[in-house]
Structures are given as C-alpha cells and as structure tokens.
Amino acid sequence: MVTILVTGGRGHVARAVVGGLLAAGERVRVASRSPERAMVPSGVETVRADLADPATLSAALEGVRKVFLYADARGLDGFVAAAEAAGSPDVVLLSALGADGGDHTRDPIVRMHHTAEDTLRRSALAWTFLRPGAFATNTLQWAPAIRATGTVEAPYPLAHAASVHEADIADVAVLALTEDGHRGRVHPLTGPASVTQQEQVDCLSAATGRKIVLAEIGPEEYRATLHQWGDEEMVDTLLGHLSDADNRPATVHSTYQDLMGRPGRTYAQWALDHADDFR
Ligand SMILES: NC(=O)c1ccc[n+]([C@@H]2O[C@H](COP(=O)([O-])OP(=O)(O)OC[C@H]3O[C@@H](n4cnc5c(N)ncnc54)[C@H](OP(=O)(O)O)[C@@H]3O)[C@@H](O)[C@H]2O)c1
Image (cartoon, rainbow, N blue to C red; front, top):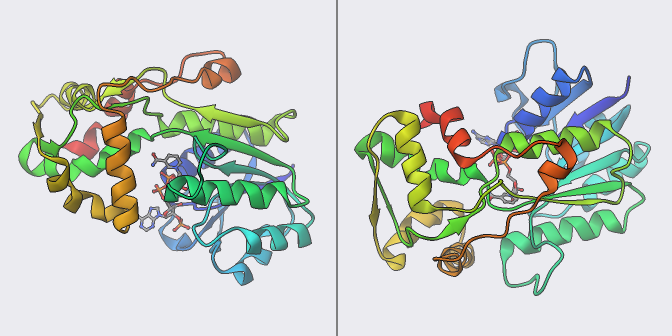
C-alpha cells in the first residue's frame, strides 16, 4: 500500500481528505506546522512540516507516492525540489477557480494559486489541480457575531456564491489520490447552486433553530471585518468580489456530479453540518 501525504493537516479541507482516505483504507501521513494540534484519529502518522521551510519536507516526503498539497503564499519551489528528490510523488493541488485566467496579478488569491500551478507544471511531478470557488467555510467568519448577538453585519445581502462544502472538495481529492486517470486534469468545483448571503443566513437560522438577522451595512464599514483575511490589497479584492456578485448568480460547475455520480452538498447541508459552530 502506498503512503499518501496530506499537507496543511489542521485545515478544513485537509481534515476531510484525511477522513476520506482513511475510510477508503489508505495509509496516510498527516503533515502540519503544528502536528501536536492536528486532530487526527489515533494511530495515524503525523509529521511536522512547513511548506515555507523546505528543510522540514524531506522527512515528510520519505516513501510517499502521492501528496495532497496546499498552495503557499511564499511559493512551492522548495516543495517541488524536495518532492523531486524524494522520487516525484503525484500531487493533487488545492488551487482556486480563476487560477488560469485573465490578469493574474490583480487578485492576490488568484496570483498565489496561479504561481503554485505554474510551479507544478514546470516540475517533474505529475499533478491534478482542484479549483474550488468560494468555500462554505468562509461564512464561519460570521460565527462569533451570530453566537454573541444573533446578527450578521455585512454589505450586499443579495451577493451570490456557489459555496462549496469542504467535504465535496475532499471527496474529489480522495478520488484523484486513489483512482487512475487524474494526472494532468483540472477539476473546477462549486456547490450545486448559487445562493445569496441572505439565503445563507436563512439556512443558518434553520440549522440552528434560532432567528439570525442579516443587517446590511455599507462596504466601507465592512472593511474592518475583512482585515482578518489580509492586507489592504486583499480587503479591496474581497470587497470587489462581493460587489461583483451583487444580484448576480454565480456559475455552477457540474464536476462533482460528473465525477461522483451524485449532486454536491448544498449550503443548507453545510449549515446543518456546522450548526454547532454558530450556537
Ligand atoms: N476560502 C475560499 O473561498 C477558497 C477558495 C478557493 C481556494 N481556497 C484555498 O484553500 C485553502 C484553504 O483551505 P482550508 O479551508 O482547508 O484551510 P484552513 O482551514 O483555512 O486552514 C489553512 C491552513 O492553516 C493551518 N490551520 C488550520 N487551522 C488552524 C488553526 N486553528 N490555527 C492555526 N493554523 C491553522 C493549517 O495548516 P497547518 O496544519 O500546517 O498549520 C491549514 O492547512 C487556501 O489555499 C485558499 O487559498 C480558498
């Protein structure tokens, strides 16, 4: 049996990938910057590894044939060198929608994933790119306010997203890591429907059994909340995405249905799965 390395072990997607691989009977090694805080089932091997610190990667990659990989803002050159030296395992990269298109320099999120994809394309490694759109977990940013006051303050209540459940991303990652035929393929991933922010809040109300209010505020007032995600460029980008999505349904990709033979999980399902985070 081959060993599959899952990087970023404490991440939402990584944890779901680990769960899926174990359920499929695979041998998993979980790499994290803080493995002692990784919530892995007992008996699963963990290793300390940091994509930004290539010296930590050789041991993590020893004997590994496949890798679930996060992009890193500081680039993936160190990872690629370590992976090539370790026998060139196949890589399934957690990338992002838009990583191939348009002007890569304007949006820091797209830029990071474009660079990660480009680095892998130029490497000796076989790769599969998972390109999810907006994560349903983005709405966890509302959780502290909802728990404290039952109110979310945000602009553009009718801004759309085809939010994707981390378990759907993980299902496709597990498929790509365990089944032949995914080398060189790109899998765009969204949830099964476009939903507005108001509809998301309504789903959270239904899931928690508590009336949650979306109180509209102006975009400028929202900036303070967005600073948790990064610098001024990142805040401008996120506000721009919200404004672009106002009253505009998001594109829905059929990849999950095509690959898994069933529809992806809805935002309403995600809200049920995460209801305790909002209580
Ligand atoms: N959000 C979106 O809408 C979206 C859309 C497309 C692509 N993406 C990409 O998806 C990736 C994020 O995936 P994700 O949601 O699985 O990541 P996440 O849960 O935000 O975690 C990201 C990383 O932070 C570390 N981490 C996790 N929990 C932590 C904690 N409690 N304290 C400190 N560090 C913690 C983990 O690495 P260690 O275990 O090594 O510390 C983890 O891999 C990014 O590359 C992002 O650009 C996001």
